[in-house]
Amino acid sequence: MSRIFVNREEELKSLEEVYSSGKSALVIIYGRRRIGKTFLINFFARNRDSIYLIVNYEDRELALRDLTRQFLRQVKMPYKPLIESFADLYNLFPLSGARLIVIDEFQRLWGTGGVTELQSTWDSELSRKDIVLVLAGSAVGMIEKIGLSYEAPLYGRASKIIKLKELDYRSARVFMQNFSPVDKVRCYSIFGGIPGYLALIDDRASLMKNIENLVLKTGAPLREEPFNLLAMELREPSRYMKILEVMAEGATKLGEIADKAGIKVNEVGKYIRVLQKELDLIEKKYPLMEEGRKGKARYYIRDSFFQFWFKFIRPNIHLLELGLHKKVLNIIERKIDEHASIAFEKIALQHMALQAKKGKMSFNKIGKWWNGETEIDIVALDEKEKRVYFVEVKWTNKPVDKRVLYSLISKSENFKWKKRENIYIIYSKTGFTFKEEENVVLYSLKDIEKDFSEEKPLLKQLNIID
Image 1 (cartoon, one colour):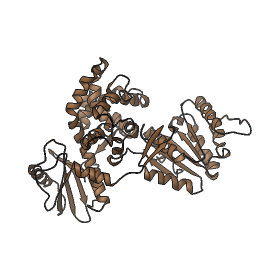
Image 2 (cartoon, rainbow, N blue to C red):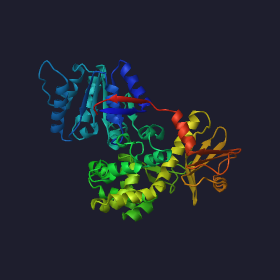
Image 3 (tube, rainbow, N blue to C red):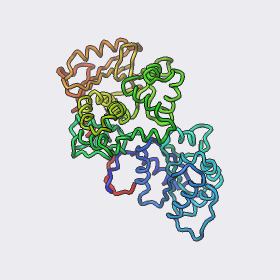
Image 4 (cartoon, rainbow, N blue to C red):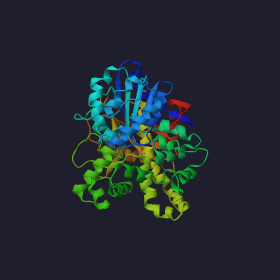
């Protein structure tokens, strides 16, 4: 199968450093499902002597038997080894002739004894046997519990810990090259930067046809994706789904989320923690310069597709079950720009990071800011130069006029920070009715597209079995 390998330059560089060092190394690669862990590993392992194992069971005996079978299918041993424990299996790794050994979905070994046996075997044998052992996993919280926390069995043993994040807009655009600039943003607002979703897009068809084929029709590959992911990771997903549903509708504060979801305020926190810490699906934000301040936190769905699904699919699932997917598609088509406005803010922030990389602006802190009823989409601080960038992001069908600038200037007066130089930046989908002036910078969608097109990500076409 022909696939596109996009970006991941830093991750590949880290793996190459470890592999070419000539020393034994333990590497942990983790991230949410469909983020591209296996694809990254397969890409790196090509043309290298390697063994790939995946943990399919959480039961000790089943897991050990299955992993042994996988190992012996890939390695020809001069004798039939007696494998009665995970330690017996691990001790065969140096005899395999492979320098790179991968254990995928490693978190499933947590309750089997396989993790503690690896700790012991690594310390006593494997760390001196010139192998690179890669442990990959998709349960974010569990992998952190295994390898990152101070009490973790593998704490301090990993040479590299790589958390795979979703692709930025610069890289996600590769999967939608035939779309118009407007539809690229809309598409990013739906599928985000998750490679497993982006790879399904057929940019020769329209965006709406892709939504219909990938999400709405009976048997569509992503129609039940969020439900399946939650059901796979949680014993009782219904309350988590209700929380995500009210968050998709706009609830951001704990009390508001609890009230709309019908959950007691003193209980909602534990569900939020699982969604945030264990599954990496939501994020906790504070106003810039007020991190950790009590009562200021807001919660947002981090994953674009989950935001889209809980906003448009979950509330209309009854229509889809009746075969009325065209009706749901019409709802999406009418409201897609309201949804895309959130993604346009993310893109604007990424564009500012690109401008900083090019030396066109400088800041050391950046984020959203709010105080009471006043809210500014992005505020960035250059504390050294005493400069503040105030940013308004507008996803509207009409060009932005000067009233938006005056409103931004007015709101910026509520941001209490030392004497500074103010720079006002406005991003617009459709351009402006006025021109730039001193301390005012304007970026249209056309400008953004041009800048991202000039900064191309790593891109390779390859044949690979995933």
